[in-house]
Length: 290
Image 1 (tube, rainbow, N blue to C red):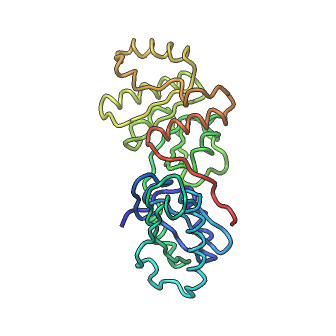
Image 2 (tube, rainbow, N blue to C red):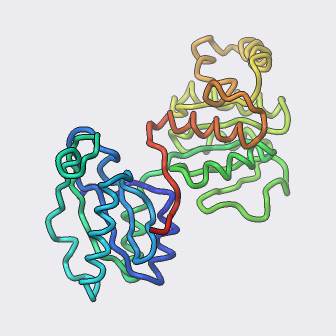
């Protein structure tokens, strides 16, 4: 069975499923140009849809089929998951310009399926370590939380974290702050934006030292201007770091072409850059009534 991809809709879907049955529609396989990849899913309730399989006529028809199955299947667990997937030829059958072929699997689910669905829909999340609880850090937490990341939020100051944080965000006081670097998960994306340049430098040095030893931090991002990076680069070179090692640092952070300096704008630009590092597609709206 192809694993269902992680999705920001999962928690919303499962909380609603506790009260109302649904049809889970999953992309079983694809051929050619199609709107979404294998493993993508949406959940169809009698009065709402959670997630998306790509929109257009394909999704419209799949929603209609799912609701018809909900009506004629009085009891859950009647084997709809075992039925053959439904084949959609996007060009000839649906008039979509993609022109590929999508196989959709339909499964009726209800509250008793929540434990197994929680495992199946969890998927893999990419670890991110965010150093800094300031305005940009707080904006980033809100932007990253629904994306396919597992976020650890680190600061040396007590009381800097808000009273509540989004699900799957772990906040961790660490003093000195750089002492948290050796314990980061392998393949962590690191974002450095503490309240002081001195702390930023300490964290950056710890990350570069870890890279020498393990080479397991694929992205090290430092907030700041080109001027800040030039100053940091001189200090790091004086500590013996080579030009090749310093090329592993991204500064300024965020995708190019976004000029705003508001915390929310920076957060969006940085989140987009992180998504580029794992090559995932963007997500559409959480849920919509149909």
